Length: 117
Image 1: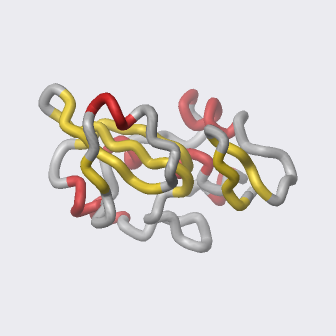
Image 2: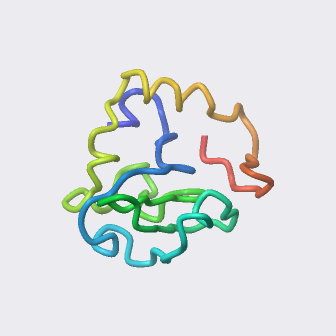
């Protein structure tokens, strides 16, 4: 879906979403952290914390479920927050405006990541 619109999954990097269900179904490597910690974590990975009846999930860096061709490797258990991210709608376009331009890396919160754009 993303590739058809000219984007290489910009929404699959540095994402925070609300999750209902068992986080480890979609993110087996997810690490439990406190509510206070989740916004401060800088180490790439997937983190989660309970938050008023749902689970807050934060992906720091590239989503571990993003395939080499920028497709989702867990389509059958993709979180609603990802599934509902509509191509070419306001949230998609906002994320795409933040794509780094022709660099070998990009920096997010002081951490360098290889550029895939």
